[in-house]
Image (cartoon, rainbow, N blue to C red):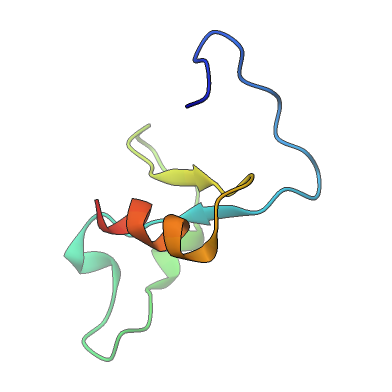
Length: 64
């Protein structure tokens, strides 16, 4: 686990994942709504840094 007191800056080429946390952020056909790409007014935003995680670990983080 990463030490919360020593978190490195996000690199320019680092991959990030943004997880949908509210069901109204996607349509019935599974596509996402445009508001997901607009700046959030609130700080409740779910983002995962991939760093050395596998694809499976990244998906699991989104499901948890």
